Length: 238
Length: 285
Image 1 (cartoon, rainbow over the protein chains, first blue to last red):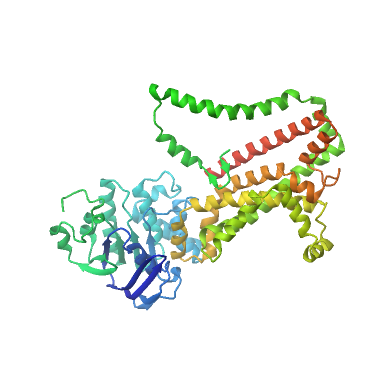
Image 2: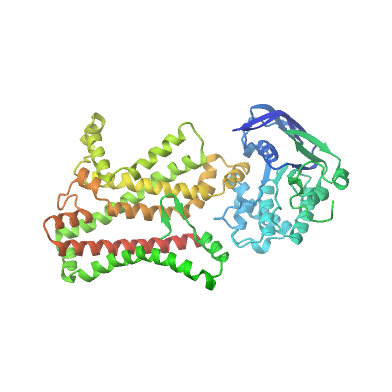
């Protein structure tokens, strides 16, 4: 469960005022909205990467407003993956457990389990350089899921992927969600992605949250009254 | 060498750029030739000064640089002091550059301007400033414990003052290049800020340390003004290769000055090549 209560964030000239948002436990929430409307800021606030001026954030019923990012039980997958270029895939998958000082045996077992689950066992010794876009995002998802987070935050994770890989990754995310029951907050500009995954679809407009009926993206030409939402939306004609 | 103040092109960037180069067409040739003509003036000058030195140098005198204890002392002191200065510079540059690029704080612009002072200030003025600083009560107190003026620690400090500014700029360019999201991801995975620094950011920044060390070493090697004023030119004490060249020129011994210059040139080039090889190795690690 993700609960934003009247949160206000000030970032230089940009501000979000009194945003309230509720995402139930186990939901796959997709967040859409105009570029620069504050979607990423909201996601970063949930992760503890942006200080709040006012308001409270509860995750899984626990008030995390004052907690550091690492204690919030969150996994983050940024747009470009932001993989650590000096580490192998294996190091990525074991990172969260290594930071928590888990025994080496436990880490190795979890790395193998994750690699198998994500289909990247053959990449374990490789560095991020030279991995394909899809492979990179698989590693980023594995790294985020390693410590069994309650919440997975994805910030336009597939914006740079080709059509075929994109479809594979959607399927993978569905599987991750189904098999772990993790609560997801997924930012995208791509309506096909939203349609495939969203439950619920949340639109941020004029600094306020509007919950949208999924069907509305199918029927309304432009549900958010916003040009940028059509970015990457090149197929299926909705 | 792809290092410079505040600017650094990585090998990956070069490779990426090379893939997007325009093909050279016949119609472009006059334009490109004109550019090449302008560039060649500078490149020919560089090769010219190197060639002139090699052409005019008398080999027996180069031998004397290593056999004569006075000259040999200057060579060894140059190499040692530059190495110490380089280590100190990178050691200070890394935390300074991290703070300047990854933390916002009050007065950051002012600090940024202050960091440029050693780069823009005439070297002699830096030396004079150091001399004055060590006349103040805190300076005098320090000198009672470690002697700086006209001594080897002073020589290293004089080199460090300028070298560190260049190393800091290079490290700032490196930290700016590193995706800040990596650090964000690291803290969401359970790292404290310092863990994220040691485990993620610093290993990423390693690729910038070789260019930073190279530029610090090169600046320290060539440092003359502050060394002259603050550390003096006492033979067998604070004499380094640039001071030897100056002293030999003063007494009209152009042959010896050239010989020392050639030794300086060869050692500098050798160090630059070694650093480049080390840099390649690091990128592959």
